Length: 443
Ligand code: DSN
Image 1 (tube, rainbow, N blue to C red):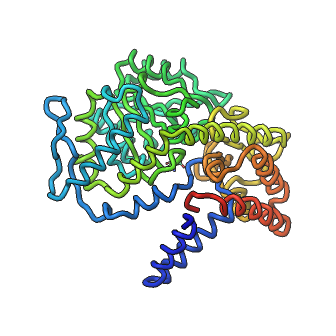
Image 2 (cartoon, rainbow, N blue to C red):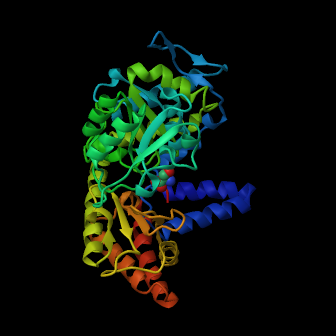
Image 3 (tube, helix red, strand yellow):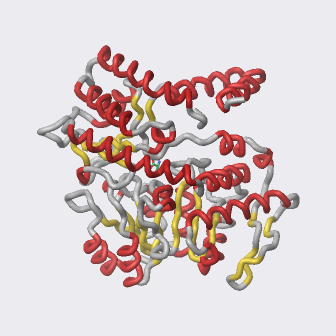
């Protein structure tokens, strides 16, 4: 049975009990099969990841860990609070072992925690592991591509800690001399390198030197680029960083969850900061799905996938440039492209980025509005963020990127014209449904 038939049978089963829910699930599948997802943090999972999520592990409570720490040494001994953990211990140990294999060269020097329910709790746990309330952390400012949990004013990471921020330079690049100056001035206990909307390569070695100089822990939040780091398409944070965090559902194509990998010496405090300090029972079905996703990410097919993600981003960005869109940092060195659709007098611009994101969706192209460096109003940003992980999973290559650039251009040029955008939408559906139809991923 093909994956598509299998999942349609599963939905028939849901429909036989709850037609209302089944109908909404079908509608979402239809939406995904007929629109192009260019949101760089989205992807499609394999059937085996989806089915592990639906497994009996969802029934189990497993507070604690499949190990205990004794004087800084990890002991292979049941560290759970409830009975019935024979299999949860096996699956979590397997996920940890695969995570270490995937993220490190010398697994025995590191520790992995696979219990964070997403990237935000993973970051909170790491901050809690190393900082006391009131201590200083430093990260990239949100309006320059940083994340809420890197100390933004609406996040608990600035309510409980003293957050200071570095920005990008005028070319949209990290300015390491400036970061070093700020670190020397504010003496943060934790420096966060990583972003949600940064199109350049990150020099983790330089970050590591800066952190060392001021006595800070270096956290590399690689949620967006994890897949590129583990396959060599982007420099790896280790051994320069002390800890890395990542979501597992973006380019890693796993379940919606977070992972923390740290130098072994920090294992006890990181584990304690995640549970019991921050979370309760781990989601064991998600951990099972993570183990599957890590096996996939260790394969040659996955390496080829990440190479294609980068190639696709290059072609898409070059084509958009050719069409006179304004790209922050003039291109991309990863999978992510940031368009300034407002401040571009001599090229393609629109009246409002939020409105343009809606018009793109009308045409079947799903993106997100985003701040660009220097935006004064994060709620009314000037940018559109796009990326290639999802379309690459569907099997799209350079030719399709050229087509997608053309469809974005047409949408921008005719943004006010519903009938023209309906034509674009028909082209989008034709393009994506062909790939969705043949894909073995869950779409
Ligand atoms: N929502 C994530 C992203 O899209 O990058 C960040 O949390």
